[in-house]
Amino acid sequence: MFRNFLLTMLIILPMAAHAHSPLSSSFPSDGETLDVAPVEIVMDFKASAKLIKVELMMSKDKEGNGFLGGLFGGDDGEPVPLGKSFLMSMNKRQVIPMPSLGEGDYSLSWRAMGGDGHVIKGELTFKVGGK
Image 1 (cartoon, rainbow, N blue to C red):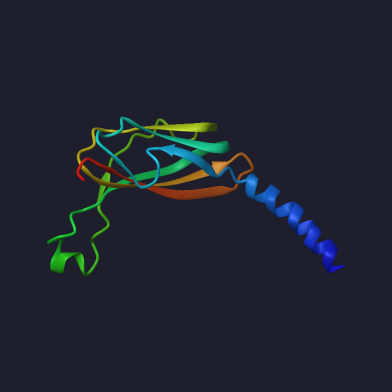
Image 2 (image 1 turned 30 degrees about the vertical axis):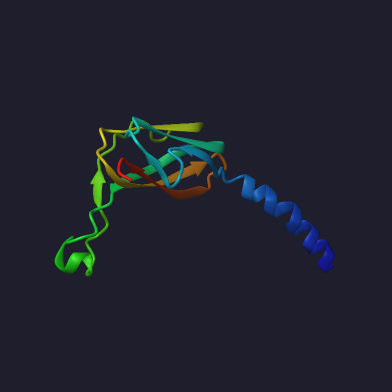
């Protein structure tokens, strides 16, 4: 009985994991440092997905940020306004046009819905300029 259960789980779990359209690659890739700011962010999913929410934040300078250097919160960063034309389109490749970005550290939080209706989310960070 236990062997049948284990065999069933070994068959079902890989199919369920594949059905959620995980991100297979992106440009810029997570943690990448770029010399020039990207004009777009490209996200490739393993299966079709549609972006339902995307937020881009520019990290604030850690030194002297707010009361006691951000010790009491308020250190989330500056939101970078993005358009919405790229949202709700079902594709394996999602392209997010970027506004003009300056040097700094950026964090892109995203939420997408796979073709099976499951919501997936993630975050990728990148740095523009500097060493």
